[in-house]
Every structure is written in C-alpha cells, then in structure tokens.
Amino acid sequence: MNWARPSGRKIDLTVGLLPATGAQRRMGTVFAIPGGPGYSGVKALSESAGSFAELRNRFDVVSVEPRNTIDKGMLSTDCLLTGPWLTWPGTRAEYAELGRRNRAAAERCRAADPEAFDHMDSASVARDMEAIRVALGEERLSFIANSYGGRPGIEYSRLFPSRVRAMVFDGADSPYIDRAKSWLHHEEAFTRFAAWCAATTACALHGQDVGEVWQALIARADRVPVPVRGESPQAAYSGFDIKEAASASIISPGAEPEFPRWTQLAEAIKRADGGDASGFADYVRQSMKSPKLPASVGMNMTHCLDGKGFRDYAEYRKKRREGERLLPNVAGTEIWHQLGCVGWPTPATNPPAPLPVKGLPPYLGVGAWADFDGSADIARRVPGSATVQYQGYGHALYNSGNSCIISHVNRYLISLRLPARGTSCPKATT
Image (tube, rainbow, N blue to C red; front, top):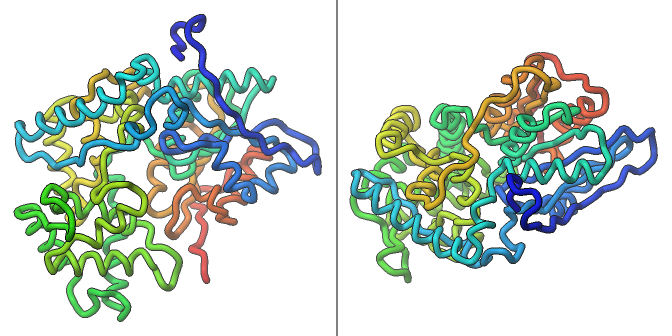
C-alpha cells in the first residue's frame, strides 16, 4: 500500500492480458495505462481489443485495474462516486466555504481507510506498474498512456527511466501546461458549435446569434440561477454550472453530420434561456445520480495528491482572471478539477516534477483538437520526440479505433521510428 514501507500492508491488483498472437517474432510487452484517474485498464482492454490486433503480432498487451479504481472494497464506492456541487468563488469567504464542503466530503470517505485514501497518487500507481514489469520478467516495457494515464506515465518515466523502451501519450493530461492556454481549443470548439447552429436548421438556436444567447444566459444565471423543474432550489444552475455541464458536448459533438450532442446542447440552452435548466440536468443524470455534476471524491483523491489544486486563494484569483481573459465562453471549466481540491484534508504528496534530462527514449504524443496540447507538451520535454494531431474530434484515439493514429503509434512501437515533424491525421469522413 505504501511504497515507502514495502514490508508493510499489501494490496492485490488485477492485471489483464491480450497475448501476442504469434504471427511474428514477439518483441516484448506494451502496457496500456488507463485514464480516469482510476478507470479499469482491464475493462478498457476488453472494450478496445480490436485496436490492438496488429500490435499483437509483435507484443503482449497488458493493463491493470489500478489501486485508485473506486470499487476495490477498501473505500466506499458510493462515497467515492459522490461529492459536493462545486461553485466558482467570487470572494475569499466563498472560497473558504467551498473548502469546508470539499473537506467534509473527503473526510467522510477517508474515515473508512485513511491509509488507502492517502496513497492513491499517480507515483504509487507508477510503482505498481514497475512491480508488474518485474512479475512479467520483462527488461523494459513500452507504454500507451491514455488521458489521465499520462500522469502515471510521467511518474514512471521519472522513477524508472531505464525501464522505458517507448512511450505514447494519447490525449494525455499534462501537469506542466498552463490550463487556460490549453483550453483555447475548447473556445475553438464553441465557435464551431455556433457556426454549425448558424448553418443547420436542426439546431434549436438556428437563426439566432448563438454567442450572444449563450453569454447573456451565463451572465443572467450567475446573477439568478436557473431552476431545474421538479428539483429543489439548491439544484438551480448558475452560469458556471451551465458551462461545466455543456463542456463535454461542446468538444465532443458526436457522429457527423448529425452531431447529436450539439443538437442536445442547443435544445438545453434554449430551455434554460426560457427559465428551465432541465435539459442540462437530464444530460448530467445520464452519467451521474445527480441533477448537477458533483466533484467526485474518487477522482479528487488522486488529483489532489498529484498537486492539482491551488496553493491558496491568491493563486485561484490569478488563474481565474487568466481564464476569463482567454476563454470568454468557457472560463471556469479549465479549473473545475482544481476547485475540487480546495480545502482537501491531505497534502499533495506527488506534486508535478520535471522529467529527467537524460536517459529517456524519444516519445510520441498524439491527440485530437481538444486534447492534443497535453500530449504534445509532455512529448516536447523529451529530446527527439514527435507528435501527431488528428484534425477532428475525439479522445483516447488509439482505444477509439482511429486508424490513422493507430498506424503511427504501431509503427513507432514496433520500429521506434517517429513520424516526421508536422505530421497530422486528416479528419475522418463519413
């Protein structure tokens, strides 16, 4: 449980394997690092086995149900899935009140097993990965790190650089990048959504200036939250709530040319503009047992240990002003996870630290419009690395079956040859 005390308490980890098919000479093992944080890599291998078909001509593919997967029984699953509704504090007192609510939610979950709760950081996950390498008997591993799996990938690179044969970051979360600047692609996605509405009669806002409707709604809701029909007054949506609920749909509109999530988003905006935020609440309820998006304690127990929070109120204000300056339509969504760490009861044990200057092989960073910057930022910190951007929507592209990205990743993992500078994948057509 605690790698600083290796003779102490032990935990079990479930490892999943897609064995090499034997079609060609086996070259080793690729470790697929799951995102989340805390998503089961065993489940991901089952869901995405087809993406690894060619790679398995040469490699075994393994993954893990990491220690921070929420249903391991050490901590209450129901507790970890819940959390407070976050606010966008306007004053020091509101910031302190948010901290009190976050801390109370965390302490309720932590009470069941404080030792487990305090060792869910990404460096511990990386050390678990090294234990798996030893158990497999492999001299080195190759990696594909998806989404927040990029953070354990970074930690493994720092702790065990000589054990890394190759590393792919796919839509990865970079702890080094400026959040507001990395969210500029979200602003661009909102511009695409507005343009789609202007050109598409199926959009519920067709014929209106979407930007004006949106900004007026956000400003009005921040003054007087929009109620959700059939819910308590506490469930009313502020402008901040609306932006966060809409965020995933803005950057992931669904299959072309229908763009079902943009269609749903436009209808939700229209209803909210008319005084009912039920459209947003209905969307949130599809994935959460809540009319508004809660800050998941299960995710935050890793985020906050990984140093994702603010140092203090002054840093929060600075980051908020920067977001408001750069992100006129989505400001606040870029610091949503950081707000979940305000008032956290345990200190950050694994704050971001630089990658080694020497000893690592060149890396490959890939991603779509909205998540490329994180992967690219990590890869550029390792000399000789390369990147490939997919000119379209999506996330975790390798697991999603994006054939162009899979081709570049497989070529790198098999031959260690990287794509030329400026290589990109064209937007898929339907």
